[in-house]
Image (tube, rainbow, N blue to C red):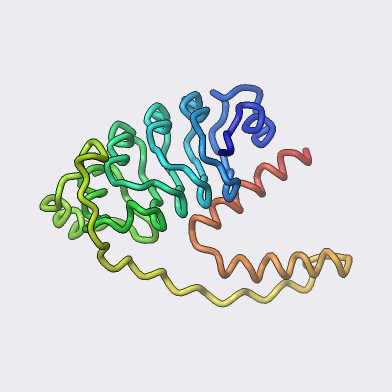
Length: 210
């Protein structure tokens, strides 16, 4: 079990206290215990994909949370979603590639439980899907009440654009050029969640150089 500590969070964000943190990216850190997040009252964006998080209980106190990325974790049951019901500012949620996303009518049931969302996983939520969600099976409030069933087909991932050609004046040294070209090529392969993570990392890197 890998526990996320206050020291790690403060070191990563360069903040001097947990309540000053607005964005946190700990993608692919093998984390299973993220209980410290409950103390981040002002956090707005959490990127915790590719970890081992099983419970959503620690996020329910993050009242300002607007984007939560939890793709490829270990959230086992849709009943966990009720922990997010009170997050009125939550607009973007990624839960795909968790066991809970395999349950019957996963999207419609999450949308019914969290009507404040505007985007779930890869797809925006439209009026037609909201109407359909009203008739979806309610999500139980405890895992013992859950009745997992095979999933519906997931929404298709949008086609990726072709990588742009690097500018002629991209850098002075050959090494810098090669790194920059590689980064630019990889950007075209990233989805929205990954791009958001890259954006956060770039902003933190720029701040550290000032």
